Image (cartoon, rainbow, N blue to C red; front, side, top):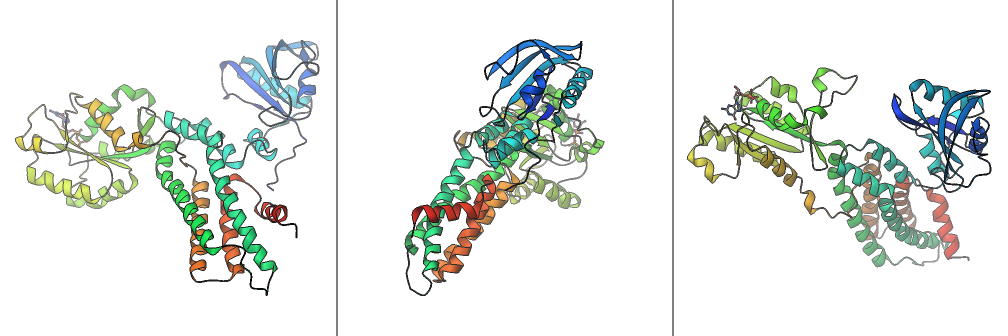
Length: 452
Ligand code: GDP
């Protein structure tokens, strides 16, 4: 079991973001939460009120009023942490926020560690590990899709699927382990054919989840997008035109240098992050031979490539050479014929491309809808489980590997004890995702099924 900080303490922390606001919320969790707030609350006696109720009153520091507040009360076990929780909504000055937190600390609360409320929810068994992680993702979600993925994980869809997979496997593990107990006697409780069939089924599910990671990752972190093209094709003009209405959200991440300022385009619940825009601004030679290495590097980092060319000057032959290179990268791409306000050659009409004018900002809506289509979001069933967490990806990969070892072992008729080891490894990796304790529940299953 993961050892957390002392669960007997009553913890306190600011639940809203630090800074000035209309109101701020300070939250306490633990056995003394009600007593601590009650000791400095002028209003109803909080030890006597019902759970899930809100109360108006004053917070007092001895005889002086600290603030006029609303107190929400959630009694154990029906609360976020399963402990008594109190949320105090106070006026949102940073001075008051600090003062009230200090007041509660003086009354016996301890400052919570980062994420400790959610950690308690996990340690107290209200959520499993992957659900707890989803809370963090939800708080950090910056687009509609990212929110959807986090919310579905938090509600337990993913955990349920992992649980189902594990339970099926545990059954076989218990059979195989039982064979070991019989040692010399040549018994086979676990039908190898059925075990192979089950493993194929598990592998299909796991590979489905593993494949969803690529998408989950871009949903969570934004789609790395790159604009490539010859010098003066209009790359930086295009970037500006695309981001024009979106200027406000071009984020300047604190603590980073000018180079890493990210330019982000938010489209229907998905963000496209333009990478290496510094390179574009310098308008360097990216498609031509000297730039090929650099282009490859950029494209390697990207999920989607936008190729732009100057349709008023580029020859059909040069265009075709660029296009052939573009295709060789094997990434979803969009081809844009720029400067069609000047002229557009006849051969353009035979090509699968969008004719635009970056300077006149013409064709931006088409570009946006084509970018979204490239992501094939419409093909994703809304109920599909998408994984977006690195740790889950690792654990799933490990369990897929262990399952493959089981398959190989069965084919080679390897003895039960080695088989049992590989099955245990697969179970362990799956169990890591939800934070379950592997050996205990494996033993529990054996014991409950076979009291011999
Ligand atoms: P980059 O080197 O690919 O980043 O190209 P720039 O964005 O710096 O553009 C090069 C030149 O082409 C600039 O003078 C732009 O104003 C001009 N330009 C870009 N897009 C268009 C367009 O759609 N039509 C016209 N007529 N000029 C454009």
